[in-house]
Every structure is written in structure tokens, then in C-alpha cells.
Length: 164
Image 1 (cartoon, rainbow, N blue to C red):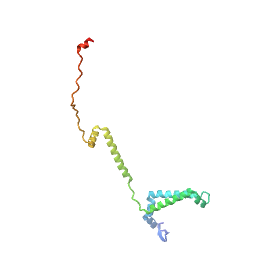
Image 2 (cartoon, helix red, strand yellow):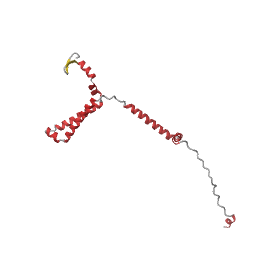
Image 3 (tube, one colour):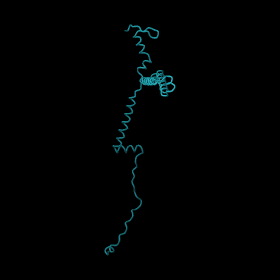
Image 4 (cartoon, rainbow, N blue to C red):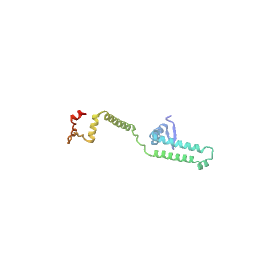
């Protein structure tokens, strides 16, 4: 089959040459690998199919185009989806980002915060050190009164108590 000639765009090419040129074609590579482009193509196809179904529902096509608001909306959605596909194909392919590394960093930070909070809850000494760091060292407070305590009330004479 490799020697078989195929006519493509005005020039003869072997099947091997055709496959080699397909591998180097940026548009074909993009169509095969870009998930966002796949999603946009599926959206365009779905809305076009829905519009076609509404157009062929048994009424006259001209009447359906002029009167059916849902059909008009589907056609507009199809046009926007095709425009998005074309725009996506024109843009250079964005390099794939490693989303997992972001999740790993977030997970590590969350785990460290959780472990630190647990340590603060569990350890009174650690809480004291943290409060000292945030608000300064605690001053020792000793209270000494400058007034004398009140004198006890004089007792009644002992003889008056015995009479009663």
C-alpha cells in the first residue's frame, strides 16, 4: 500500500508521504490533542444538530426560520460555537499546565496549617510561646496593698453576755 498513489490538492503523493505531512500539520495535531477544542467542537455539533432537528419538524423551513424563536436561538448558538472553534484553531496552542502541582502545594499548606492548629490546641506551653511572640512577654504582676486591713469590731463585755 505504500506505493499506491493518491491525488491530494493537485499533486500526487504516496500514502507514507500523506501520513508524514499529517503528523507535521499543526491543525491536525491540535484537533487530535486539544481537549478544549474537542469540547467546543462537540458543543457546535450538538447545537447544529438541534437546530437541524427543529428545522425539519414538518413545517415549511422558511416559516420555521421566521417564526420559531427557539430555532433562531439554536442557530445563533451554533454560529457562536463555530466562531469559538475557529478562534481556538487560530490561537497558538497553550502549553499544558501541571494542575497537580498546584493541588499538591495547596494540600501541603493546608496540612501544615491543620497540624499547627492541632499543636496549638494540644500544648499549653506552645500557646504561651505564640502569645508571647504576638503580644510580647507577660509581665509578672504582684499586688501589695497600701492600706491597712480594717480593725475587727470590739467585742461586747463578757459580763453583759453572762447576764443574758
